Image (cartoon, rainbow, N blue to C red; front, side, top):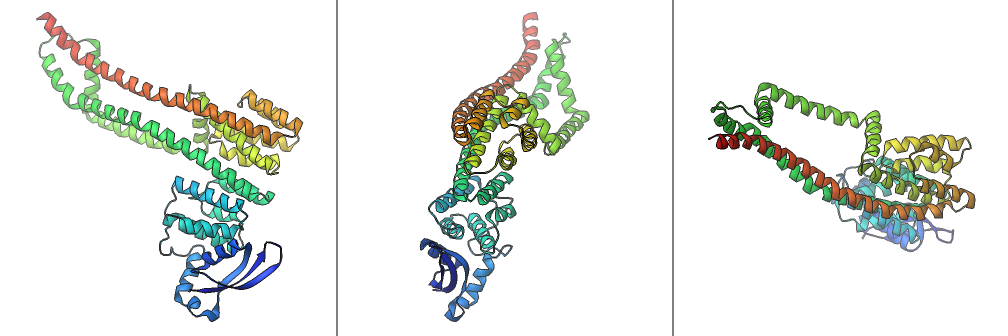
Length: 420
């Protein structure tokens, strides 16, 4: 088994040095962490023979940032559930008193997927090289978003990384659960609408013209719904219809790209807040995240002026985030938090009153966490209403279109029978 020489800082503050046997460098770091020793420097023992051979050199190369992926390691995308598990394991390790490098080593050993193992190995290598965890996470922008990096940076600054990591893991898990529920609820109505749309196109382009050709031979006057439907069918079957379809697709792509720009995102998020059902649910989700994140950072001792730029990234709505930015600017000039949120007109009175009371009593973090729990329950109820009503509206709209097509096709036939 390879041997490593190390220098470390023991839990009682004294310097420690020696050699340790381990299958690889992360394993050695993890074993030292279990003994309560924070690794300052570790390298293969030059006199140990096997440790200085080609295998060890390859292993060290794998640990360096930017090095090629090693065996069982991948640079692929990390899935949402894998990210939640990683954050939870890291929070548990830090909460148990392990040093950061040791906790990362333990997480790497427990990683199931090659992408996660590679991600944790790169984080550990960066931290061992002297980078802060937030800096290492910022380099992995495909795995961690701006909010997560900012919260970790705040935890490092305040010296409460273990508490922040636990809150971050809980937040990521709740957010993932919410996304999975929404995705599961949307699958059925989207499938129904998609199949219905394709069925309508087939009827309009291939089936309806044959029926209408028979009806047209009688010379009888056609009802208005039938004439409208025949006009739509003729347009769809003509070159102009193909051009309009291509233009619609191009317009949709252009609209989607515009919605990804800062101005487009701001407009779309503002429009979401004005929609019935969806608007209140979106606002409740944002308010719950605002209260929980600000409460967590406040409890960790992060100043409000430093916490608000982090909080704004958790809202998931740029229109509300703009109001938080304005509030943060005014608070830095001496204004009160509650007054600024109230003047925006975008935050519920309950949250404003809680913040005002917290400012007066010095219990802002505690009251915000209680408020976040309350809003979590309201958010769940609001989302259930959305998931119950929106699919019904989609299916109802599809049913109305199908009913119009049937009426337009059957009315001339019924008229022929009555006239005959």
